[in-house]
Length: 505
Image (tube, rainbow, N blue to C red):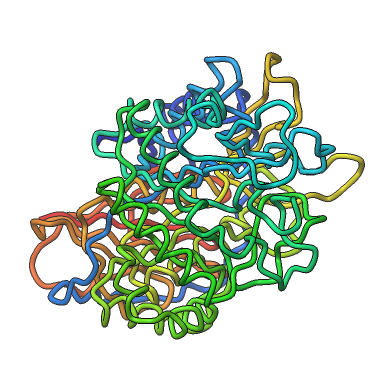
């Protein structure tokens, strides 16, 4: 794929006018719609040379790509004016954007119609069930009754399915669930049980919930002419995050109940003859993933076609890697967003982009996953009512604004940090070990293109040399306080920058 790149040439410490004009044009296309003043780079200490030694003779995981979960931002932005939602889709999945190829579609559970609204913007993802008039209680739903399904639901998130299919030649779709529908829960709420440590699926409802998930997966495949390669029935299950008064969908699952749900989902997929396989357990942290896996019986492990782990907790990441290797099951890092803790909302600062890039490097080095999937690509502007806000998301917008009104779209520094990875480490590349802690590498299938992404979080410039045999041509792409994923000459990683080296032979 081709990508938009700046034409930056530096001479005597100044940027040529041609480069300034290109930067202005890029800002108008991808920025918030206005050209912003450049931020002065930090004062530099003495250079610290770094030699990178990629083990190109020992490539590991075949990488499948980058992407995002569609909940919850897609549930909002899919209903925006055509120009705005198209622009967002181009930013993430277009060939001139990030070039993402993966999307995780959230199958909503859905609260009862008479439940007073209590969830935050976008988080009340509707379910596909329909409650007949006059019925009460929780035992009325029948999967085999067409009158109890409503396939007109969730149009906004589903718009994104079509938008991605139109932009990506071979997209990979995963369906995932945060909670069962309200009538299958103990609390009657899709946000969790009364206590965050209690399971919220009613005992004996595993088969009904599995049928619900598989039927939705099957129906959306046919209606949108796509394939969900995987289905994840539980999300961050063995935690205390999900309780009835929470403001988003979620459900606690003990490891034993996880296993029951995985087994039931496997049976429902087999009965429907879908090619979709189970992804699990989508645990929030690696040490909890290890605990979940240790408790699964062999039959449950055998039912899993893809291992999913989030990286909000990174203890025992190599243990997760080893589980994937020993079991021969593909591993994804299926959810993360890492704003720097306590960093106030700032659309241009490098503090959070550097922390984010370091986290991506660490995940790829320790987990060696086949994919790295972002959480919420678009997040709400968070500085309302005098609050300092935070830097979740890589694009910011007013998600609370009326759907039919204009929405300013703010591309943050974290977007450009992601571009340093996703534009150059492409599907089919193989991850390669690199001896430097701040660097991750990938090799093209033919071995003729080597990509190294290096994070320099400090105040010293780092002259970078690469110890690989043979003759390679080299280019360097930089994101820092001044450059937004543009080519610059030389081999020096500026202070507080994310640098991509592309070597070809």
